Length: 373
Image (cartoon, rainbow, N blue to C red; front, side):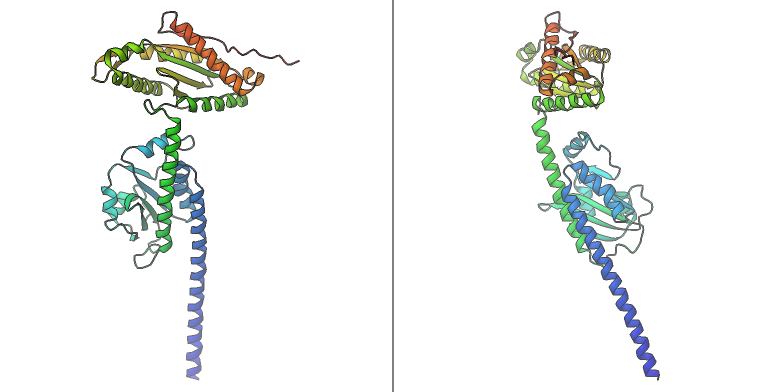
């Protein structure tokens, strides 16, 4: 009888263990499916900003984590420039860009995954401001045997990440993230190089033409006007002839920076020619755009520019302005309208340059409006 009870108890305990193992297997299978889905989501991210948004926001929510942070090596501010130029995102609280590799080497002396207790050092380094992180997984992001970053997963459950357990799927995730990060940065950098003037860091002429098309279509949808300015630096050739082309290049760079500082983030600035810049002012009426142009002209004339050897240079500029109204966008196709706007702004600029320079001239859009019968 005693033997039968013992066997029954052992069978009960065995069934319980099997049930526990079964539940663990199911949970692991669900977790693996979730990680596979996350991998597909990561690979589908087109831009760096989308990738960061997924990792720092959606990934944390999907896996019930207390905190997800990311350290990225960015010694030349390449990542920062890409994010500054992003139209969709520009702020990621969990992102830390670092110039030196040493903080990454301190976290990963042997370049391997860490899982375990979130120590005071880890909290201070990886989870600043996150008070409820008890355990964590620190994933080294490695490309070509070089540490490029760290993805840090934090949990409020002290037992979620344990140094005694294996986390092969997490290590695989680190490899996928590193590849996606490198691809996104490379892809966007190439795109940026194809649209940015390398000297002034403003849009190039091709990119400006594309932006003008987008803004005209937006003006058509919203009914808001669009200001278009062509700006030409006065007497620029003598700067090159007297002070050298390096000084001329510096003036162009400083001019581009001044325009960026004086204009809104929604405005577009391009280097349109040698010493000519083109500017788009979405939502600006004639009076508002004229005031913006006057402010730019005055700011330029009151700024002391410096040459390559820091010699003081006084620069002025002439500006031509026109306005695209919704009636223009309804009257013709977009390609004709872009040509008309540039031509009109160019004629206004010509008037400024041949009537004393250092002035702003306005000319209405040349497009003939077709009256609907």
